[in-house]
Amino acid sequence: MNPENTSEVLEAFRSTGALLHGHFILRSGLHSRDFFQCALLLQDATLASKICGELAERLKDYPATTVVSPAVGGIIVGQEVARHLGKKHIFVEKDNAGALILRRGFTITPGERFVVAEDVVTRGGRVQETIAIIRAHGGVVVAAGSIVDRSGGKLPDFGCPFVSLAQMEPETFPPDKIPEDLAEIPAIKPGSK
Image 1 (spheres, rainbow, N blue to C red):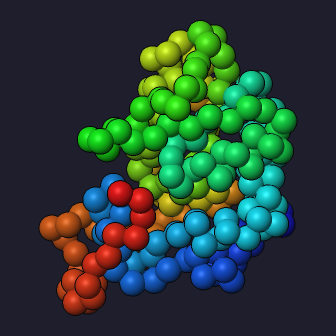
Image 2 (cartoon, rainbow, N blue to C red; image 1 turned 180 degrees about the vertical axis):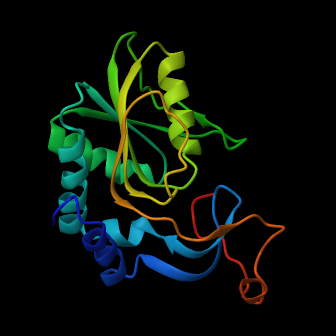
C-alpha cells in the first residue's frame, strides 16, 4: 500500500466493511452520511499491522520515545504504531464525565517526547485533549497522526506536525441543518461513547 494513495486506504475500509453509509451522529455532534468504523478494519491483525505500519513510516522522523493514543479507537493504532517504531505505548481514557485522563499507572516524565496516534479525526478534539494532558504533565508532543483525516483541511493547530494516510471531506451537518433526505433515515451513533 502506498501511503500517498488515499484511495488505497479507503478501499481497505470498503473491502472490510468499515466504511459505513447511512445517517450517523459523530462524536463531534455533527451528522454525516459516512462513518469510519475502524474497529472493523483493525480486527484483521495483518491489515492493522500493514496500515498502522504505514502511519508509523510517516511518523518515524519525529524524535519521540513514546506513542500515546486516546481510547478506545486509538488504542490499536497506537499500539501498532509503537510496535513498528520500537517505542513504548500508553493511552488516555475517558473518566465518568467523558473527559480524557491519564490512569492505569501510566506516567509522563517531564521532557518525555510523544507522538499521538489516532484512528480517525474530524475536528481533532480527542487529539487536542490528549496533547493537553501530555503537556500538563510536562511532556512534549512532537507530532500527531491518524489513519483518516476527515476534516477537509479544517483541523485546529495542534502545535505540532500532523500527518494522515487518507484525507477526505465527507459532508457533515450540524444537528439543526440536516438535509431532508438524511433526516428521513434514523440516526445512529456507532462510535465510542
